[in-house]
Image 1 (tube, rainbow, N blue to C red):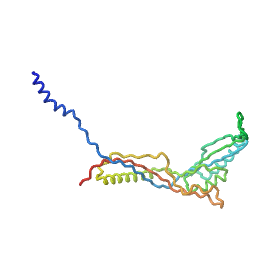
Image 2: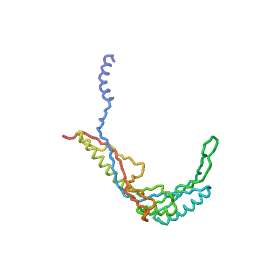
Image 3: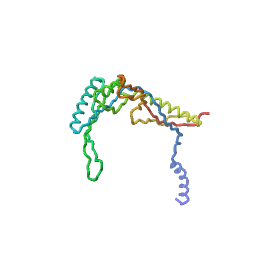
Image 4: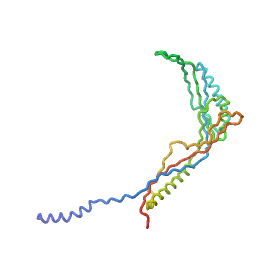
Length: 245
């Protein structure tokens, strides 16, 4: 084969080879991303109450013995008050010394242990949210001298959360359509959807946590549980295209 004929064959084959090697890149769709949040108010149906019994004495054993007597009275009384409709359990117990320091602090002079403090915390779980005031009064009358915490919760937030998710998804869809329409576009399809799970419990909105610890007129301590805010957040990515004319 002559050099001229070989060159002609190469030139004829070159366009075909170049055409096969060129990839076809699909067009990237235009998108709109929105995040929407919705809140559903729910009535609490579970209460957690933390009561503390704190005692103090010169000797650790005396402080512990006094605390045990008072705590046993508190626990027994609370279990009788909630019966089989609630739960009473100890959540923490501590003994620590109380130090007395010299009037003038000097190097090498250690503080002196003056007394000991013993603390026993008891938690009450009950479904009767209307019994909170009476439980507070009962615990204080039985010997508790601290109210460490009051929490209103939901036994099961599945229904409320599902409603919040539905509302958030609808809101996100409407917002995406509104944004697209304002830009002369239309929503073609949903490309992705997701939610952000809250890391904490539903937010409590109490009208009054505990106005007073002991009612002076004999009435139970007024406590209004209010409502809980169950929140849901939805992220949405939609494909958009020019609106039809």
